[in-house]
Length: 204
Ligand SMILES: [Zn+2]
Image (cartoon, rainbow, N blue to C red):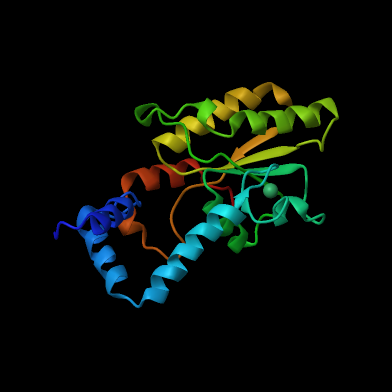
């Protein structure tokens, strides 16, 4: 690569993005440099706007540019069911299904001892506080907490931890089923998915 400090700095910053290795970062940096100057300007403005306008909702920790997010504000959504997700992006997946009309709670990650992420780094105490408030009558009573976490080690660990914490709060605790994708052939399903699908079988 050319030894140009400004270009190297751009490559360095881009290579921090998930899924972007040093080669892709270099390609992107050259692309930005080659593009008309307005593109760099628009990109800079977009980055600045996202930083100044977007923040987390104080209720559910979803991203929003309003005081509280649209899901927390909506009076037509059920306040007694909370769907717990790892990342704000997961909310749109659940919303797209049209199968859920309750509130959300974003943990901003999952417990991962290997990566040094413990319960205190996540929005777990805020979730427990919400449930406790309902128990004490200081907030809406929570009837059910649905865990919509990833089907991996971190997701499983987090579900286990939350289940233990919520055990004596008289709330129903459930986890979304993991199994065979719609339209797929069971010949191609991996062993772990098949195991989960069997565990989560439904009676007909
Ligand atoms: Zn919210």
